[in-house]
Amino acid sequence: MTESATNWKKPSIGAAQIKLLERLSNACAISGDEGEVRKIVLSEIREFADEISTDAMGNVLAIRKGTGRKRLRVMLAAHMDEVGLMITSDDGKGLFRFQVVGGVDPRNLAGKQVLVGKDKIPGVIGLGPVHLISASDRKGAVSLNSLRVDVGPSNAGKVTIGDRAAFATQFLRTGPSLRGKALDDRVGVASLITLLKNAPENIDLLAAFTVQEEVGLRGAKVAAYTLNPDLGIALDCTPSLDLPTWDGGENTQYRSKLDHGPAIYVGDGSTLADPRLVRLLRNAGEQYKIPYQLRQPGGGGTDAGAIHLSRAGIPAVSVSVPGRYLHTPVSLIRLKDWQNSVALVHAALSMADYSLLKNPR
Image (cartoon, rainbow, N blue to C red; front, top):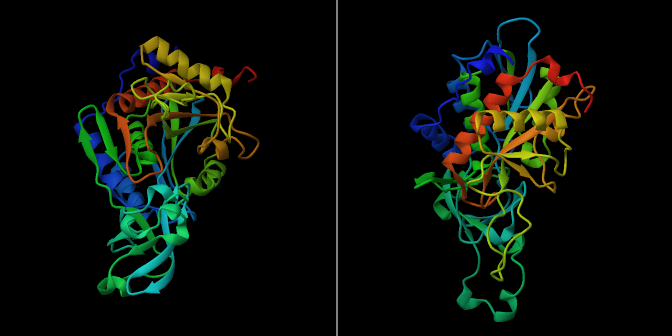
């Protein structure tokens, strides 16, 4: 056992970290326009990293070196971007057509408030009122072509083609839950900042705050090539499909559940997790009595999908906080699941050494 594991103490996720998550959640950073979150990240990590750079894609790469000989180089990745909208054409008088950026269901959009562009011009996504739509038309699916972002005539000249529009939801703590927009993956960003500040000394921690994950894991591909780690862990937020079925029956198809701890991925749509890393995380959970769950194999994907295909191949796994209603204007997580997620990853890193990778997958 490493010395870091023998003396392990879990990092704190308390009032300061919740305030950081609030700032990150309320920031607007649609894929390709992550500057507002990047600014927060840089201000938080400046005093804690030995090296910091921002690459051509906009990824923030930070290295905190450990002590001792032959240290593992561990890449932790969390994406700064969120799903949202992009303005595509001007219909006049403050009405704008748009396309979604990332996986957004148009059924979640009508009537939602948004903030448009760098100046955060307030707008609303308009759809014809129910009183004036025929019953037959209401049976059809809502199409993007039937929706407009309405900023009003006085603000029409302040919006231009290509501007991003983010949901205007404000972060809120309510009992054991935290809710806000873009918790996928601002909770991962907050976790990575915390882990960088409390990096175990037995490893070199390579932090990648990535861009454009929601449109194809693009930033992580570049970041992994640059950092060239021995292994990688993606820190994300995974859909918690734990509600009853709509007919009132039991849902047996959940991917993860609230209140059951962080979700360790076995496989998803982009990665078959390295079993050595799955075992490491599970061993850490068992040894330090940190609750965890195994995310059922299925669709979706995280930055691990790009990391494990970089260079000659990099062992990779994902660890996610379970969250409800992801890729909608508001998402919800449990504080305890977030705390346990940070604890599990930190404990696993404290246990990691080169013997981990000596055996084949």
